[in-house]
Each structure stands twice: as structure tokens, then as C-alpha cells.
Image (cartoon, one colour):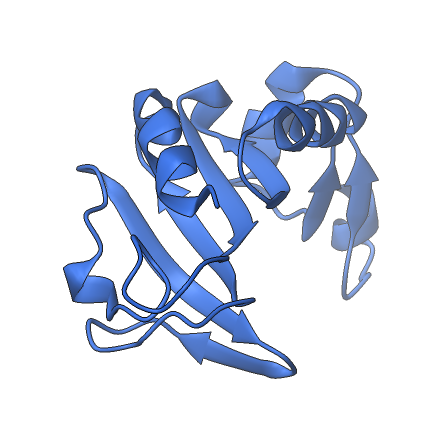
Length: 137
């Protein structure tokens, strides 16, 4: 915070105490990195079913952001379907689809293709298992 007061345009901080990470979200720090949070995300990605690339714990573990790869055939649970037809649990939302070098902001009529990287937000981590089942091959 001192660096920002002294005129630094962008400030990055390494946070060692989880309680401080919450403070950084509303303060002048541009980027706060928590080794604990990064480690938790790596572990969560490892234990998730399906082809999960990244997981980030949000709101002190109550919610998650997840990147998974869609696999399957057209007309399956996810692949070949527009987002509005995918049966996501309440509080889960597909926000972005990465197809090759293209980043597509998800809309109700965006169709998920085989190999797409799908980024979802889950407001309640209790629904993670349902989302994992959707994206399993």
C-alpha cells in the first residue's frame, strides 16, 4: 500500500496470511498472490473428475471458478448444445468459451464444441459434482 501511495502505477503483493487476502480485494493493491490459494487451486484441479484444467477457490472456499475441457460427441450432455440447453445446477454459469485462439463471451445461444475450454463460475461449491458429471467423457 505504501508503494501505491508513493506513486507506483501497479502494485503486486505476496500474501502469506489468508486473512490478508480478503483485505486486498477492496484496497489499492492491483494483484494479490497467495501461495496457499494457488496450492489449493492446483489440488482441486487434480482431484476433480473430468478434464479440469484450473480451479480457483472464491469467497473463502464457498464458491469456485473452474476451467474444464468439453469432450464428447455432438448431442451429448454438453458438446453440440447451446448453453441455454445445458442442464447446469442452480448458481452455476458458463461465462467464457475458449476455442483455439478465440475467446468467446458465453451467450445463451453459444454452442459448445468438442475440445472447447469452458470457464464456469459456481456460486455454491456443493454443485461441483453435478458440473463434473456433465463434463465427464
